[in-house]
Amino acid sequence: MKRLTIFLIFASMLTSCALENMDAIADRVFDLARYQLVLMDSNLKDGEMPRTIEDGRLAVSDIKWWCSGFYPGSLCLTALYTGDPLVATLADKYTHFLDTLSRAKNSHDIGFMLNCSFGNHLLLFPAAAEADSAVLREGADKLAARFSPITGTTRSWDFGKWKWPVIIDNMMNLELLMKFGTPAQQEMAISHAEKTIENHFRDNYTTWHVVDYDPETGAVRSKQTHQGHADDSSWGRGQAWALYGYTMMAVQCAEKGYSEAAAKFKMQSERVAEMLLAKLPDDGIPAWDFDAPEPALKDASAGAIMASAFVQLSGITGGKFSRRCLAMAEKQIRALASPEYLSKKGEDFGFILKHSVGNMPRNSEVDVPLTYADYYFLEALMRITDK
Ligand code: GLY
Image 1 (cartoon, rainbow, N blue to C red):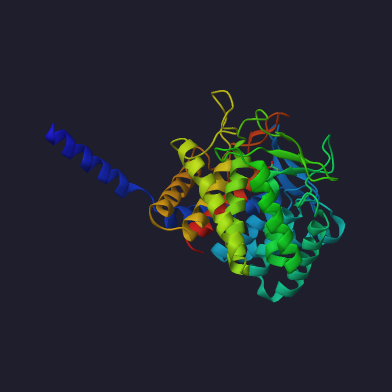
Image 2 (cartoon, rainbow, N blue to C red):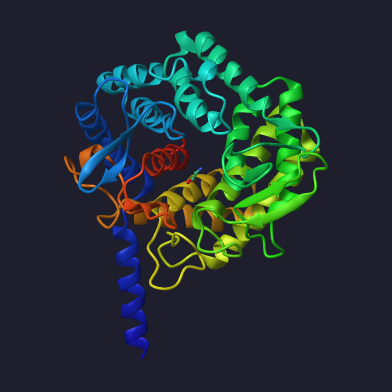
């Protein structure tokens, strides 16, 4: 028995010694990203943005699709990490395809579109920082125009049966207001995040997807899902947006001197993190919905978003909790960097990750690559290697 125990300890030590460290994983993935993102460019016509793979073909979008900032963003992150001049040239080209967005597009998702593209472009090209900041400020004005002091939130969709729908995803767009908005616009972002704590979360810190407000009174009309399994289920990516959104708001509020809000949002992100740490499976990659019938497909995009958020949260918390967040991020990154999820060089039209789920109830983008999975995976790797 004693011999067996010693053997098992020795074997597990050997296994952990053999684990690839985060720096090595990041080097390997960014080397792949450099190749894949250039390949992706060769598959696109001018003005096209990658979206996913559909029926074995590359599916593209125009610049108005909510995901148009992710491919330019991935190019920027890869150029920042690798210093590759060709990737930097492509980052510049694809970011500038979005030049007109801040003027043309009135969308709750303008934060995703501009912050991931121009927000990284200005780090890659410091000489363009002034021009980039002007675009980002214009985008913040567009988003702020969607704020209602009655509901205390920015409106999400302009379609559908709702009167003032707010989706948990919208937490992500607040980064644009916090980083590039005026103080009044930053207050709007804080109000939106506070209202979302009040109305989007269940007692166990899972979140509904859509909360519909009455625009005349600010009262809540309904709480539902749109992309999840059921109104009362926990849509995987929705939980990821919640974790990332509150962690980001805690960081932004602390940086801008809103200390009370920062403390409140940090506490919310810790509660969401505790919920996730208890619920996530062994490899850390969630199913597309935590309550979907088994066997449920995994959603790599939710895993990548969470990994990036867990790294950031571990940096603003301390002790054992911080270590648990970091350990979860490492686990998720290891899983995503394994052959199970990572595309092979030259395959998948230039996407980096396989196995995401866009919108299961509409049978759209199911078990496919998605640009935002790639973007947040690269961001998680930058964060965990402190780049
Ligand atoms: N913001 C849309 C989504 O997460 O699918």
